[in-house]
Structures are given as C-alpha cells and as structure tokens.
Image (cartoon, rainbow over all chains, first blue to last red; front, top):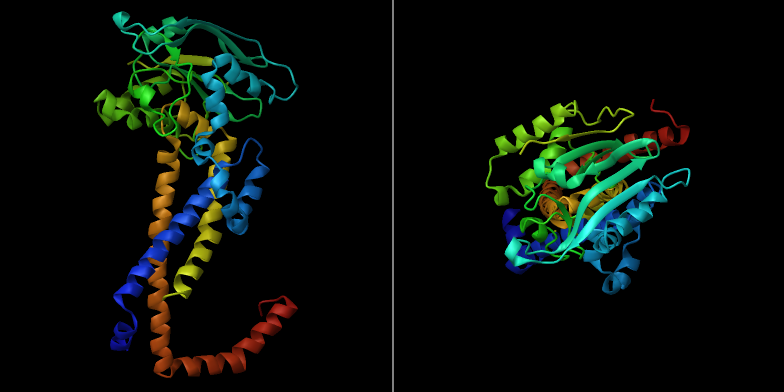
Length: 274
Length: 108
C-alpha cells in the first residue's frame, strides 16, 4: 500500500500539497480577519460580516484591488480624526450617546512646535486641562492633565452610555511622560508602524471615550498589556510592570483578576506609580 | 490528497473557525477594543491579525495532513474487506433506520 502511495505521490505533488495548505490557510484567516474588522459600530453588523466572511467570498476577490486594507485594519476613520486634533476625534462619538445631548467637554491645549533645544523633537498638541463626562457621570472634571502626567501615567474609570465598562486611560501607562504633558502629535501615525511615535516617547491618542477594555483579558492584563508590548523601550521586567499595574488597580479598588469591573456611579481616577 | 484534502479542509476551517474569528474581531471593533490597542501604541494588525493568520495556516496544514492520513487508512480498511462489510451492514440496517428516525424526528 505504502509503496503504491509513494509511487503515486511525487515530490511535486507534495510541494503543491503544502502550497495549497499555506495558500488556503492564508486566504481563510485573512478574509475572516478582514471581514471581522469591517464591522463599524453596531453589534448587528457582526453576524452579517461573519456570514459574509464564510459565504460571500467570490465577490470579495473583485474588490480586492480597491480596498485599502491597512486603513481597514487600523480603523482609518478614528486615526484620521485624531490627526486633526482631539476635539475632532471626540466629536463624532458624542452623537452615539442615547439621548442626543452632547456631554460637557472642554479641552484646553496648546500647540507645541518642534524644538530640539528643549528636547521636543516632536511637535504637537499638548493637552493641559480637560473636562469630560458621560451624561452625569464625570470622567474628568477640569483635570490638570499636565500635573497628572507629571506625577505618573493616569488611569480613569468610567462607563459608557451603552453600559459597556470602559477603562479610559489618559496619558496611557505605556511610557513615562517625557515632557510632563500629554501630547497628540497632530498627524496620523504611519499605517505600517503605528507604534513608532510611542517608541519615540510621544503620547499618541489621549483617550477619553474610546479606551476600551479588551473583553477577553482580565483587568490586570488589560493594564499590563501596553507595558509588556513596549517592554523593549522601557528595559524593565514583567514583574515590575505587574507591580505597577497592581498598584494602579488597587488604588482604584478594582479586582485584578476580574473580567468585569465594578464601576461606581462616580468617576474615579488614580495614578499608577511609575 | 491532491484535490480533496485542501478543499474540504479549507471549507471546514472557514465554516468553523473563520466565523469565530470574524465574530470575535467584529465584537472587538464594536467595543472599540481595536481603537484602544491602536491608541496604546500597539499595532493592531500585528497583535490581532497576525497570530490568527499564522494559526489558520498551521491548522489548515495539519488538518490537511490529518485528512489525508485518515482517508488513506480508510482506503486500507476498504482494501482488507472491512469497508465492504461495514458499508453492507450500514446500507442494510443502519441507514434505513437512520432515515426513519430523521423523518419521525426522534432518536429512538
């Protein structure tokens, strides 16, 4: 039997077999990720896109040449809006809050020109004070971001109007503030290397309403994720990252292993000691 | 091995795991988790898409090999005469009974 198989299967067939496996695996994984990331904001889109990812494959091939995949993967809309400044980035999301009323928000920022003599190699918007709330739930209330950032990276908890627990982070704890301020670079990151600006020490994206918890990670892992991802920049150890995250969570009185945060009806914020 | 294994394996993986991947990523997008990753300086394609892509390639390859081995084993069993006996028994007794059960909608 095996001699028959070895006679029937040539090395060319074996290569073709492996090539088909790699090709089909790539197509299946890539198309499913593509359609999954095409979902915009409504949960009702999820089953539609999921079924389209499996069933509606042939029409996709005709569109492949016209789709800018990197933009889709990176959520181009939000990144693009962020590049025009925080106010533009936040404005579209206010309309999603039921009730139709925009929550009070005020962001005071100043434009910083690149100045090598002061160590500001990257110019951008420096946020100084911010006020932000979801309805009657205050996330930031005339908070001095510069002072908060000078102390340490800060984390703030809030719930969104859709009752999703969000872990809003401003001055994300991924790196120490180099200039005692939260900085939006006022330009879009490069699509291929979006974390380059962070690696240069630039705060990219001060989050007020879109810093979502990763639902399949515990609270502790959510906090340490960014630290671990950028571990090569900090040159620190995982244990130190965990200590830092645990300190921040205990200050916020949040269960570290929980997947759902017990959110109070009042906003809380705390500083993760650097 | 040449034609059937890649095709059927890809269909099964797309149907079972592909929907799961698309659904998970869709839910992540709805909950702004992808945006949160991007804002934290984490590269979403590298962190979300690349592992799934690699896993999909590896799983399709392994399942193709598994499919080929099982189909060859079945060929060996058929060659030894077991297959004919099994199929004969299935056709004479089990298959009509299964049809009856499916029509009546009960298991027993």
